[in-house]
Image (cartoon, rainbow, N blue to C red; front, side, top):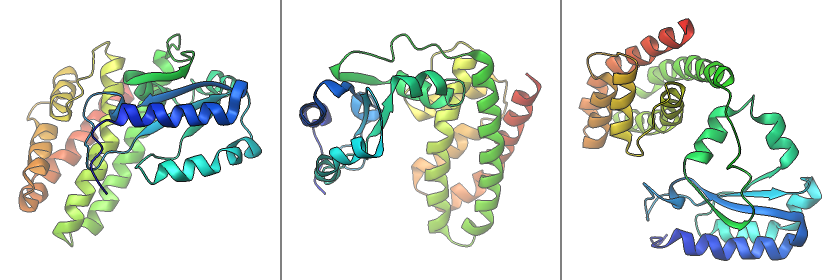
Amino acid sequence: MKAIKNPLALAQQAAREYRACYGDECISVILYGSAAGGDFNPKKSDINLLILLKSVSVPALEKSAAIQYRWEKNRFALPLFMDENYIARSLDSFPIEFLSIKECYTVLVGSDPLAALRIDHDNLRLQIERELKGKQLHLLRAWLHARRSPHHIERLYAASMRDFAAVFRALLQLKGDKAPRDRQALFSAVEKAYGLAGGAFTSAHTAYRSGDRKRMAAAFGGYAQGIWKLTEIIDKE
């Protein structure tokens, strides 16, 4: 698939189509994630939209099915469909996800429902603990399979670092710190904020970026131990 040089322009075009489809039922169409600014990869990154409707239902989702399918061919992920009631009732359950969206977004159509959102500290800490503990178990289990093949090791690194990055940004938010967009800087900031000596996260990320699978395998033990230590710290806060 060809490189996407201007994801914002494509997203604006898609937003107009969704607005035309839903009319007054559409409150907002929002571009979020890397395509809204930052680390968008023209050859790999997806384009993510949040569509806020007055009411979400299966018939409402199916109404724009043809639009969804057409834009999916241009590396658009399937949109997130929400209504205001869902957002109000879900902030306590998914603070990390809403925080991640709020970090980098652009309103393409309509009003801005995210500007006034406030993330509760206790809810955020609880989800961080839950995410760290769950991902820690998954990481260790996945390693038992990945260690059999260098190719699988690289895939494990790619997936885990993407998943942990969202949690790490939330960890800095918990401290009242601004999270860097660059992943290397993000991992370094978490190590500093939580007193993790040895640079296990930054070392693992450097190994991953090098493409050297032997370095990745050698760095994995420290990487996993760092997650274990971080989980203990959050559990006591």
